[in-house]
Image (cartoon, rainbow, N blue to C red; front, side):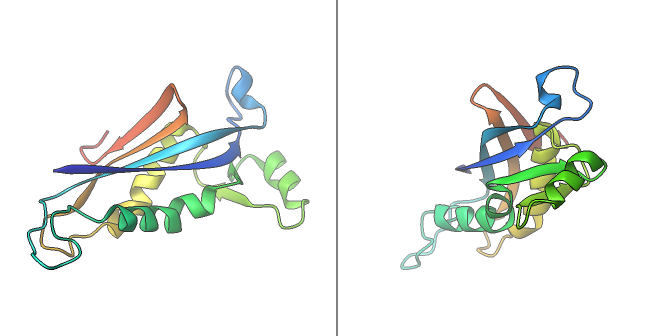
Amino acid sequence: MRITRRLEFDAGHRIPDHASQCRHLHGHRYALEVTLCGDIIDAAGQPSNGMVMDFAEVKSIAHEHIVGKWDHAFLVHRDDRLVVDLLAQIPDHKTVVLDVVPTAENLARLAFRILDPLYRDTYGNRLRLERVRLFETPNCWADALRSGG
């Protein structure tokens, strides 16, 4: 069985080497979808009975480790020194300095790597993270998949 929880957040970024508009400072209303797979829990009388994982738990983990950190932040590559230095001059600015250029593809892959060890099989139902999908716009997204995608 597969389940998916969607969370939304706002963040700014820029793609320094982009040939068009994305080289400028700009922002998006991102949507993060976390897809888990596992067996449906058969535990009569338990709160998790009939679920793969409680959607509230799926949200809590993704929010704590991704959404809460990236929401209303500027996501910037560590080598984009002009922007890193500029944002450092703004008191208490929420800046997330990344080891990767903040494309949708890299952000989805990074989110998968962060979340993968956190969704563990604590219910005996073979729970695991299968996919992280990151929408940069309603029409453009990237999928990071367990199968190496």
